Image (cartoon, rainbow, N blue to C red; front, side, top):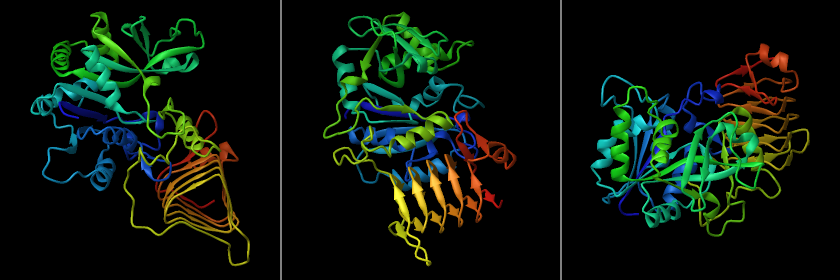
Length: 408
């Protein structure tokens, strides 16, 4: 779309996803067998025909950079690009001090393209969005800033920025992660929250970032500083995400998940395995691109003694081999090996995992390059799993960190 520059914030540490973020940034965390979290934001931009994209990286960005190079290289002689931009300390010897500061430190890159509008989006939510529809409404309203809003249960709203609007969808108040969030009028069980996706008139963004950068006590954050200030000035319009339409989609077009914790990460993977999943990965009019390694198709075999494999409601990626095992409601990434007699229930294997004979995995997240020896059980005894050095989430999901050999 002409006149628009897109900035994707991909520098998050993802501390609540630890140990999955021990050696990678949050946007680089594998998801659904073959994707990375950042792929969903990028596919939304590319499918919306926004192809001038800067990706701002910072913490533990090596695996993210490799993925972007393999999956999201744009070649040719046009002015289309998808460029990762590392923190370069352009304005002094300091890292990004907040989301707004990340854009501010790279403002020259934006201004060189002389855009009329700037999209500033997060990189680690699971959803579909035709961003053109949001930008078109932003232009029609002549707004300085437009924030995408979505309805969530009031019990979950304290994790987000909570929005209050008038009858014309102008923002009248905004509170970041309040202890007692305000409900939607007439809907006491729901609140309207920010999705962390913004469209700015370019000149308004420049002036607002300059103003914020001059404030010593600012957090230099969009949610904590920029949006509240513009809201007080009466300059923020809210885009109703429920208005967004994806062509040919059979899922829930209001689907949006923040996979910020181990439990939400596990649950969102499991939701993909439902009989009628709310998130449609099979819409060929809204394809999901990613990097596909050169691997053979997945093979499901009986073992040598004739025991058949049993697979129920699973997503299994290329290169995976299953020999006489039972796998139920699980996601297996690339190049996994599952030996005879193994039983895997409600688990996520990220890839390059070797699961031995008669292993039992129950409600686990197994990071990459994990080897589990014959006869080991994980996910049945939380105390034993803690002694092994594994993380147990609040809802009982056991996480085995990357490059672990589980021998007993």
